[in-house]
Image 1 (tube, helix red, strand yellow):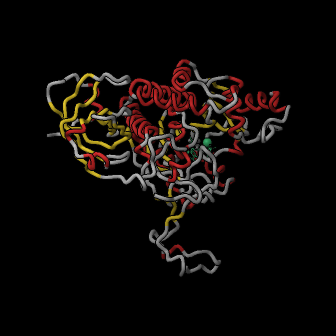
Image 2 (cartoon, protein in one colour):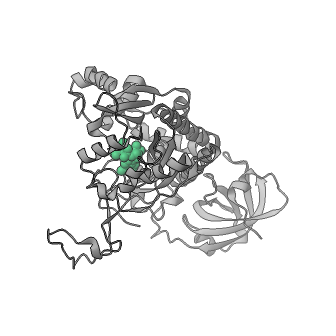
Image 3 (cartoon, helix red, strand yellow):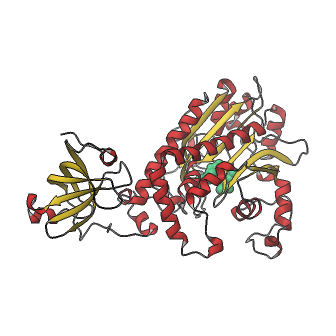
Length: 479
Ligand code: ATP
Ligand code: MN
């Protein structure tokens, strides 16, 4: 008989036919005549209750159906007397598929800490929390593609191995087949990459943007959605060494169009989660509420679903970096020395504490900051008339800080070349990028959304290591 998914079984009102379900035991309890097994197959957060008459199964066999064991059960659905479920399975036969010795199986039917579960990343999919996150993550991936597809954008696969360094050296992972124990050196004492796989040094990409720009300058509307890698040693709850990034790039767009697209996309994705992931969000909301109980009242975050709806209802605040600096510098928070990095003068790079102050304390809604000082932004951003700022735009979110970083790009060949020289960008690696400004250059803009930052926001989780299946962070590459 074909397996019925538990998601379908729980919705079914067919009490006549026998069905077969398969999954993993979450809990088991036995009374005198019957055993109750909560079975989960990952198709939905809820488990199906199996009611097993002790007469149909030898006691020894039932004893093996511990938490974590895999079983297959056949039976008829019946209306459930218990609370919390409409139906349960009245089992006619049950078979052990894979045992899980309780002396060794690390997951107990109780709450485990997220830190503990990170060390058991091979099994944490089996918890309610990671089941919910996995389904939500899938829904968000699908929604990203749907959003762009419905608008006529083309998905471009940017390369993962790159010979150029988009943002400046020092934070990239090197890709090489050289034998590290027998390196050969040039006369200047540098590693000789001529004998390396690509005949030159190569790295894992930090962004697909530069390649997306090339495509946008022919196809008009494109986006990438791929893995990106940063070897920066930032051990925070918002940084991974390997993360996924969504990068639309659009010809004939200015910075205002870019902001409109960013706001529309974020709202679309949040709405999609509310419309399609109600059960999982409900669970994650309760989980967050439990977690927040340990915090002081003023530090507690808003209830998850209200927070998502709240963001949907607000037009994002749009202000310039200069206005933001004024707000921050004059804030009581700054005057009382409550920032770890006090704001003194224009030009300071904003830390996540400043971003969050603007969003959570000052405006109480998402904020888009524009026109940052050129000194703290990348070479490709369009230069403003004032000679000091560039047409950058960062979207700041509650609880997170920067969720999107974007800009209108410099389309003028001479200005771009000068800025690249000033910033000591190796021109010989970037000739192809410069050529697009020689041949049919047009205004264009784009941005990067960190997919795991979005996941943090939508799931209400506090640590980025818990919204990606297998996190890569400094000193951590298990699994
Ligand atoms: P931050 O200042 O927060 O480190 P950034 O300015 O270095 O970010 P960008 O280069 O602008 O980031 O990248 C675009 C987006 O990618 C960011 O807005 C963020 O959502 C995400 N992002 C950047 N670095 C990481 C990281 N190490 N881990 C996860 N997401 C990241
Ligand atoms: Mn940024």
